[in-house]
Image 1 (cartoon, one colour):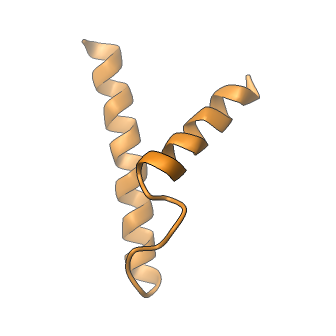
Image 2 (cartoon, rainbow, N blue to C red):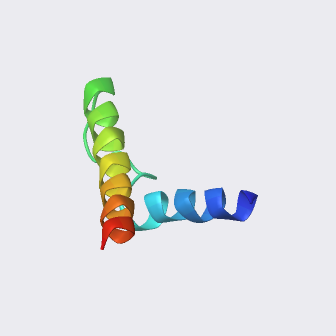
Length: 50
């Protein structure tokens, strides 16, 4: 079961830029993280509904 979590973390890091901050400041980093997680969750929701 842990492999599923690792796969999701890998997707966040490699496909959605969660490994490197693209903006400076804590707020920018928080927004980047929130948008990356939102994108992954949205992809999952769409995959489950279609």
